[in-house]
Amino acid sequence: MEYLAEFILFLAKTVTIIGGLAIIAALVAALGQKTKKMHKGHLEITQLNEHYEHLQTDLKQALLDKDQLKKAAKEEKEKVKLEKKANKKNPDAKVIKPRVFVLDFHGDIKASSVKSLREEITAVLSLANAECDEVVVRLESGGGLVHSYGLAASQLKRIRNKGVKLTVTVDKVAASGGYMMACVASHIVAAPFAVLGSIGVMAQLPNVHRLLKKHDIDIELHTAGEYKRTLTILGENTEKGRKKFIRDMQDTHELFKEFVKTEREVVDIDKVATGEIWYGQKALALQLIDDISTSDEYIYQKVDQFDLVQVEYVTKKGIVDKLGMAAESALDHTLMKWWGRFNSSRFFS
Image (cartoon, rainbow, N blue to C red; front, side, top):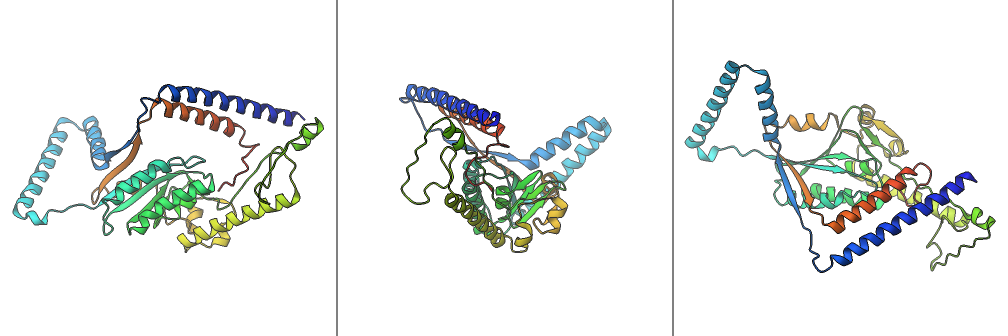
């Protein structure tokens, strides 16, 4: 009884928070309607080669004495001089380095970062050379809603469809929906203790129908379509609806398995699609990944042969957007606080 009472209190708090934030957002939107403008985003480009050079320079300044710094500066000057001389003698022989485009994806339950990812990929594909360039996605996600991560994986497939090499690096976790994205890559690199796998589907929801019935509270639910609603939180669940719900979840799992099998043929899908997770070395043995390395190591080893370009799409947000994000963040925080007890009825991968 204490557990159910606590749940009812949780629902009441959630409804109050959502209602209050919705009213505030509506008022602000109404006040700013006349001056409302479209907030467009922009790309922020970071030349990682220069970033690494600055790190090296700072360390030299701190550790080398005057004579050593003078010698290092002289050697660098001579190197630049020889390169200029060679370019003057044979301008056509000037070497243009291939590029590595570095993107970041930090996934929440709804894969919200796909909004930026789609713009970044569009920009990169407008310039990337399929013969020599590479896209590296630093991916971190424990999964979330199936349809959201399905879209995110489809965005990454655009890179492969253009014939551009796609590498996904995982430093911490790419599980469930995160692995759905990772398996699209032509090459997957993970840190030794990164978490991979969890190729499964889950769904959970509470039901307080008996509590409501005990207090003579009726809930009416009307649907058009036999399976428009299978399981509910407040109404009485039927065995027929329960079986349909489980079938839907199993169908989703089969789709997930088929997707991984298609994108990563080397994987024994029946062996890995159990919902289990594996750390880097074991994931390598199961061929869920191709190599053990951190993202820093993988990217830095290309610093001499490639131009390393980090691409990030940033959107300027107005006050209405910020209030909306605050409301969404508050709701997510409230729901995540209860995540262990009251999962949503939607399917999660």
